[in-house]
Length: 364
Image (tube, rainbow, N blue to C red; front, side):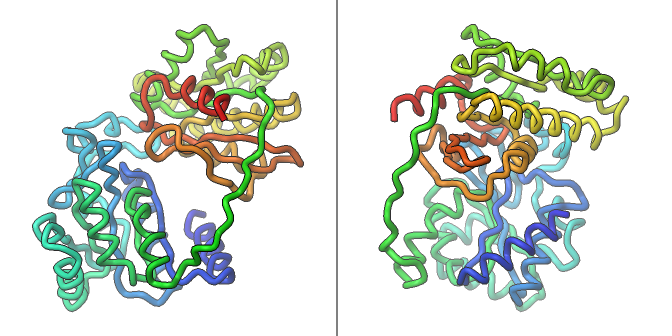
C-alpha cells in the first residue's frame, strides 16, 4: 500500500515538473523488517532510474543524530529510548544499516562522520566508491545542522534523497542557486479560522503522554478512547460526548496510554486492529466535529495524522508558522471550509505543545 501510494505521488510530482525527489520519513526511522522505508525507496529508485540513494533521518534540533550508522534519541541509542516500545514499530536495534538490510534487496553501506566532516567533495567521493562496490543504499552520519548542510550540498544532484525533514531544509536554497527552483513565489495570505476545534491524540509516545497530561491539567475537557471499548461499542459514546461540548474550549480526545495498557489491547485485538480501531475512531470524530463547526484541529501521532487528513479529505496544505521544530500550523480546505490543522509526530514538541499551538494561532 505504501509503495503504491508513493509511486502515485511520484507520478504526480513528475507530471508537475519535479526533477528532484525527497522521500521523507520519521527521524526515528519508524519501520519494521518488511518496511516501509526500504521498499518505498527501492520502488522510487527503480521508477527514477537511479542506482544509489542516501538515508539520513537525523534531526539535531529535536535530538536525533546518526553516528557511525547508529541512531540516537538525545543521548540514548534508539533501541534504549522510548521508541523501543512504539506500539506499531517497536525499535529494538539502533543500527540503521541492520534495520535497513532486511527491507531492501541491494547492499547497504555507510558514509561515516569522519568522511562527512571533510566536506561535500569527500562525501561525493565516498558515495562514488560505494557505488563502485555495488552499494545502493547508503546511511550517512549527521550530528549537527552543519552536517546536514554539508550532506545536502554534496547530494543536491541526486534525483532521489531520503531522510528526515531536517535534511530537506537546506535544499530549496541550493535548488534555487542551481536554477531548479524559481525565486518568484508569492507569499500566500493564510486564512483566518473560527476559534472552534479539538485536539486528537492517537500517539502513545512518552512525550505525547506528557503533553496529554499537561493539557488535561489546564482544565480542558477530555475523553479517553479505549480500544477494547471501541471494539465492542464503536464511537457512540465519544460522539455523544462531543455533541455536548463547547468547541471553543478545544476539547481533547485521546487514546494515549502507557505501554502496558497498549500491550494489553494488542494482545486481545491484535497489533494492527488495535491501531486501526483508534485511527478510525479519531477520523470519525474529526468528521463529526467539522460538521459541528470545528475549524481548528491539533493532531498527535503519525498514523493518526494520516487517518484524520484522509477523513477530512485534505489534498493540499499551506504551511504557516512553526509551533515547534518540525511542526507548523497548516491550512487547508475541508468540505468547502477553511481549516487550520497541526500534525505532530508523537515525540515532537514540549509538554505544553497543545496549548502553545493554540495560543500561536490566536496571536496571528
